[in-house]
Image (cartoon, rainbow, N blue to C red):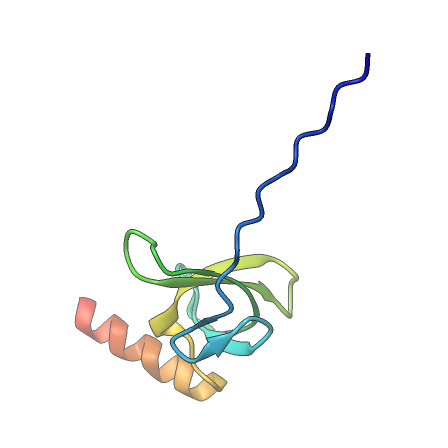
Length: 91
């Protein structure tokens, strides 16, 4: 006899976090990189161990990238400036 399919539980996904919404375009300097990349936000991770984070698709390469919400900026120049501040603090 055929088996009955189990219904999957649908988890309600978070739609906004710190002023960002799914589908927004954000600029950020990813870990291990020095140039800002533009991301289209696809997921939020508010309970991440280090800091609240977002996952986005890089518009240039199409790769999935995860960065802290605090690293996201509205434009490329602000993202680079934010990166330089973080870099200066760590030195």
